[in-house]
Image 1 (cartoon, each protein chain N blue to C red):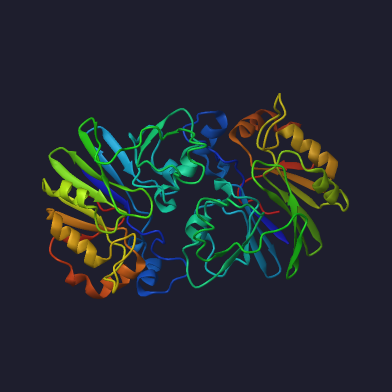
Image 2: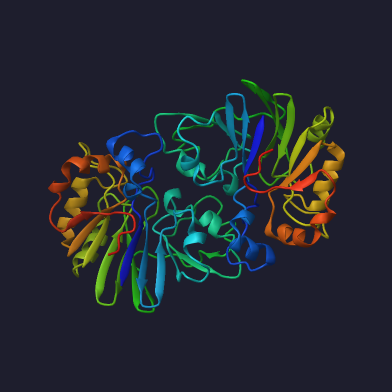
Length: 249
Length: 249
């Protein structure tokens, strides 16, 4: 089972348009420091699922019939706007499994095109796709949002964006069996006040402590966290690393 | 005054994802035949306005402060989705002038970021931006939609997508003074039934006949029209040409 982080940014991406902070200035100069919309690809035996669809070049990246389908965490634009063009394809159907969200994004439900939104996940529902088992985990965000537990080929990975902390039920569910890998929302450096909608580093590290995964990767990184990490990277605990676009886990 | 066609496709773009028609097959092989979301750039003296924002790489194409603003014809995703990321910039404000549309696109009005939607156009309202005069022309479409009359440096250009025919008032307005150039929606080859929401070639040629511009450029081209044109291009009247991405007028 192979997880590739296609994008690792918060909604603003890195560099932020017009920003001259040290992180954005560095990313303007070095494409390796850029961050695209937060999304990933999970591959397990013959299964190949895209997690979130905020990248706007999906028709270029994924030839027709190369994806088994799409696991949507939620329908904010930076996680779903690639669907706005992908839907107009023809000659194939792409299942999009995500949370129950009556609003979705824009007119996607009204004009779904080749996208099949008919099978949203219930909380803690598990689905078996060939060798890949996917369980939907409720998260805490400003829209209905799911994380995913991905199990297959002897590994157990949780992919949890966008969230601020975890609901008790999700935390207890994940504590029952150890994770090999936790990929977790961490949008901001430590904040003086409790953050809303997304983890800051303090809350992300607290969640990692609670779940005790084999290793943890921080994603959904904002430019202020990237700037903070330029000074503080050595302060991260062992077995906690910061995501980069293209990282294979 | 210089008009550059940045994209010339209908909502599906060319090639259509998964399509194997002659036009899509040719466009897969030859990037010059591809069509991106329908949009343009009008430049006049020190003014530089983007017409529609469906391109999703606006932050790459237009460095901060390089645009005077955006003229929005309407808020369908293929004409507006580039705004969903552009809004998260900082340190500048970009005016977006378009039709009054209470819905806009997705949550753009709720979270406008650096975009200023506060000055929508009224029907036939004219605004002077330095040497460029812009008049908003009501069109016929499935959402509130405006075309634009662009006047400056001795030229008179009308840019009219998305529309099926023209409202009488707009037609009469444009007939009062001759156009040097008409850029017009023509999404489909001639249809057996009257088309909805977009011009077919028959209706586009009828409109050109009514307005008698110096020349006419067909844009918002769908793949079925591109395929039809492979056989019939020589049948277009004199002074009527088919747009290409990157065309400078």
